[in-house]
Length: 265
Image 1 (tube, rainbow, N blue to C red):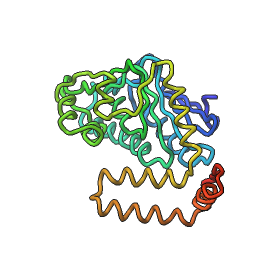
Image 2: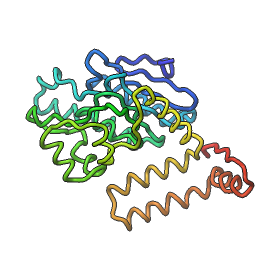
Image 3: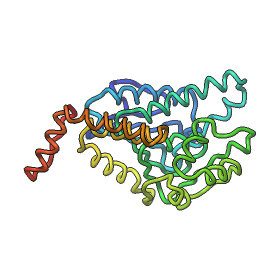
Image 4: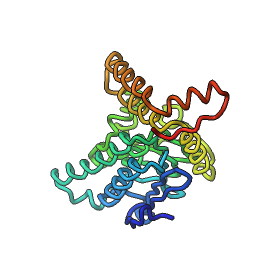
C-alpha cells in the first residue's frame, strides 16, 4: 500500500486510498528530521499527485509522537554557505510544490513539529493537530534562524509580533497557543488526528476539483497581491470556471435539489 506507482522511497511512505494521496514522513530513528532524501522523495510524490486525477486531496503525516523535529543537524553541522544555500533550495522547492499543488493539502500532526517541521506544516492548506503537540522555532539557539519560510509564513498566519516573539526566543509553545495564534484549524485527541484528517479530506474531495484549484490559487495570491490585483486575478479564475462542466453540474444539481457529481472538467 505504501509504494505509490510501484516506487519505493527511502524517507517517506506514499499511497492513495479513497481518492486521498498520503505522504507519511518515515525517518523515525531521526524523529523525521529533514534531509535531502526526505525533501526529494516528497517533491517527487507531490508532483505525481498533482497530475493524478485519482488524487483529490492530500494528507501529510508523521509518526505517533513526532511530525518532524526540524532539519538534520548532523548534516547541517558540516555545511558551508554554498551547501546551506543548496539545502534551502531543496526545502523551498518542496514547500512550493505543496503551496502550488492544485490539490488541497491537509497536515495531520502528532507530537513534535519543530523548526523545519513547523515550516512544512505551515505550507499545508489545513492543519489538524493533536491536543498534546509541541511547536517551536529553536533555530535561534543554534546561531541561525528558521530559513525554510518560517519568517515569511508565520507572520502571514499569526501576527508579526507573535512571529518575532517565538522566532527571537526559540521558545516552544503548545497546541492551545498555536490555535489561538491561528496556526492550526482543528485540535483533537492524538488518537483521532488521522480520522479527522481523512474526514476533512473526504469532504473536500467531493467538491469540484477545478474550483478547488482556482480557489486555492486565489487565496494564496491574496498573501502577495494588493486587494485590487488580487480581485482581478480572482475575477479571471472565477470566470474561467463558467466554461467547465463542473460549474453546470453544480448549479443544475442545486436547482434540481440533488447532490452534484463533479468530474473535474
